[in-house]
Image (tube, rainbow, N blue to C red; front, top):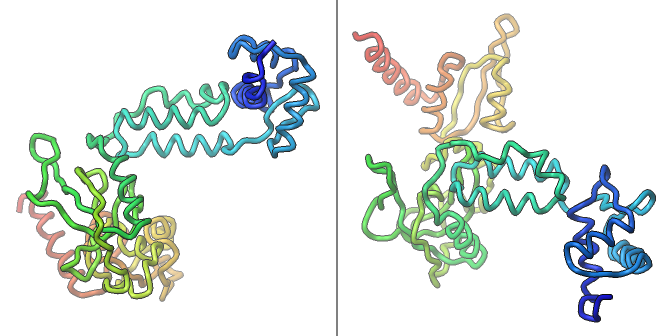
Length: 331
């Protein structure tokens, strides 16, 4: 029989057995629970102890079904939720290969032993263009603390050289007011401000190294242009689709009604249809977007959209398209 110290742990060990070995498709009899307790923990007890402890777990709020054998009917994370989280790690370029595998192993342990077979595609992480920056999780943790405590951060900001390695952009560290971290297009970004400027900057978190939180208080958001009333994150992300810095401009463009899925994917629903042409299916829309982001977006979707305003953007696109035409046609 188990001693007093092990007896105190019995309720936790029974819960662990149920968490790892049961679900709606896999029920455990009292005898199977007793066998697992002895085989895995060296604990011998009787059926009455199993039932009493399971009833205590139910009283504590655990969803354990006892109708036809014992099984844990619900968990903190459903398998579908874990699958989504694992896929997010799997295809995140800002997480290194080693970190990705470690995170996935931790997520898999949130379900039972049968879950791993359902996500067999994670056995080999895909060969994506993953970051080589092994400090990413340290950076995320430091930024989270700095944002929470309202402190400035110092860090080296890097770019890739022709040797395919990260190199500092300058010798001295950046001193930044951190306001928010966001994920966009498979990358993590820091939204922040440098004291001598009155606008926002975006920093790729996988390009940040040697970060430290300072004791300097962060600049209040109300002192940053456009943040007088705080950061409206959905609006900010819709206007900065490629995370370029700078002001947003009013844009008018023509598209087709068949472009609605793409328009909503990129800009959300924060744009206005100001004209519909039923004959050819064209729509004219207006929205606010970062100038540089709209420039590259218009090139990407050039076969399907036409920028009408602002004139400066339309002219710059025309000149760029003409230059591209010369390159590819040899004229």
